[in-house]
View 1: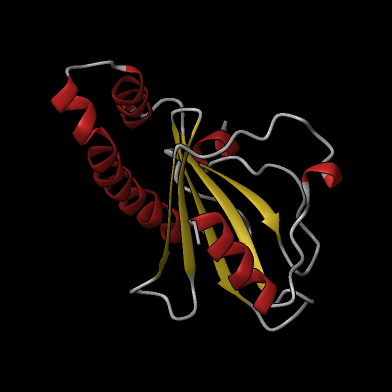
View 2 (view 1 turned 180 degrees about the vertical axis):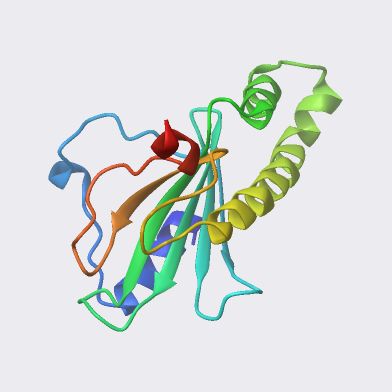
Length: 162
């Protein structure tokens, strides 16, 4: 069972039905180059999904809540385009090297993704989830928020002070 199937199975156990390709309102839904699913060591009940999509790291934070059908809020976290980390992931993914380099690429990308995700997690938890204000190094998009008061993209703290 691959990571996508594991994630779908996990969410199904929580009563969440996944969209199917024919249900999606958009055609461009690229598959992740790398996906990692992990439980938080620091926040009880929180899960993370780490992906590299279009050579860019993405972190989905799943936070348990006591309301709504899904009983969880989900946030998509991306690094700001201003950070150098995005560029390093793009260059690493695009570079075509020797055979031995290619053999180690996936493991190296996974380690790089873990390191980037740790930074993204710290920045996410340093923010204010209730008001959706976060450090300027990340962009946070509420994907599923049970109280329904948020929709669309919220900007970083830096962007909100401009």
